[in-house]
Image 1 (tube, rainbow, N blue to C red):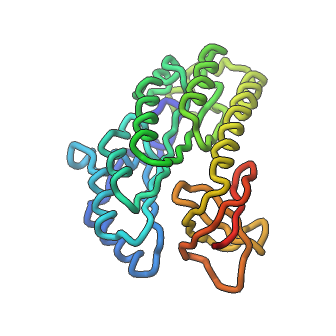
Image 2: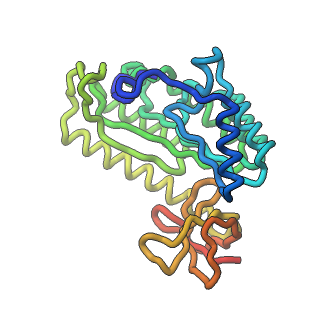
Length: 281
């Protein structure tokens, strides 16, 4: 994918996928070594094997991992909306140990800006995928990336982005300001959105995304959740840091037992601005 603002494809070259067997063998080795979670990484995991075989086999990979390694949690990053299809959504919904978390970068809610970014989808395409995810994957958690201030972005374009954010009800959003990267197609465009306008739009966008994240976290309070303990909290060593299947960060008091790397159940007692707090059950 050659998004007009991104330098990565020029630096790293065309997409290359490992073979299905190589992935399965490496996962088997990690599981044999005690891994409790496997995270599939790629610039665009959804196009796994497409260049080599003519079509994506990512949904098949998820299902095979689910069958062969049912005891571990499976996550994946990053997805591209153009290639994120119903087969992948169905695999997430139907494979028990694939976590209910999807990171799906929107970038903009304006079709005109999406076209200028060379993203390969429209706002309607994107919204339909989000709606399908929420319909098929129970309690799915969705995060996204959003850029403001792309060359040519008008106030109307930005308002369409805000509208899309509200419609999609993102649980988390990573927001940033456009900066030109030498060598990209976008760098040849006039960077005509003023720094002040970029900052002001970013603040308005953050107000919306923070509200949606707060609502998402508050909805978790009172629930009992399985979490995978990552280790002591970096900010408070007296508490454990753990992740739910939906990738919510949870902090809870440490006890005498070493829980790092274990799946335990916690009761969610309160929500902060970016994380949850709980107690061990």
